[in-house]
Length: 254
Ligand SMILES: [Fe+2]
Ligand SMILES: [Fe+2]
Image 1 (tube, rainbow, N blue to C red):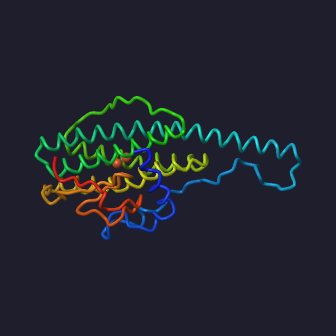
Image 2: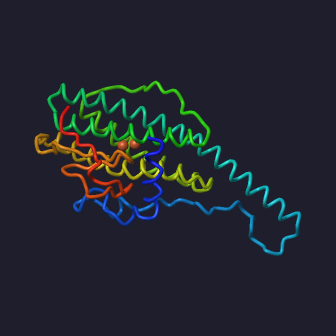
Image 3: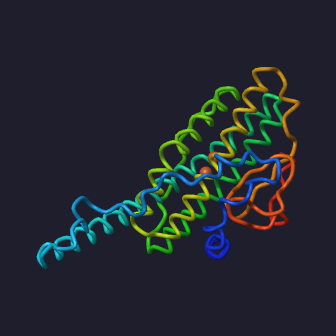
């Protein structure tokens, strides 16, 4: 996995905004917009005046260095936090899939199983980046509670919403300040994929509430590089990581 994320990831960095994330019928546009990262942020006062004297210039250099060092340390912590979150989400969704199956909601079980696979890919990517940075991923003992499928869907929507609105945008901003390209790639893969998971869960919850679970998709595809998740059909090329659609993993059985 370590090697597999790097080459396609680097290819993807300049092009992912141009592709739909899942085939031609994907909900692209806003879903593929980059977060408001702050990659060029400079500490207050640094670089503001070209006529500063040598001492001031030296202090500015130290300030920038410290800021970059702080951002690197924070990025390592953020990757560890993200690894823990993704590992927990993967285990949780796998158990939510079993619960949905018990309750007779086969299509929702399939969605949870698919998302579990996707979160596992995010966790593996974050782990690979931590190792590239000379760190070890933390030991994780996932803690969660399995409730009814309706409540499990609500929990999943809340979790994906937090990751989309708060966690990954913040982590991406700090990784940008740190100048950590691999961190940016791995975090962005997860950030973009969670934007796919949330509407899939919302659609499943609406179907459950409307007693129309049987109308939900019976087949999903997961990108092995970034975890991108598509219902119905695989795209020709992943809109997040540019991985060829033929490499997508089909999920159509429990
Ligand atoms: Fe994830
Ligand atoms: Fe997710």
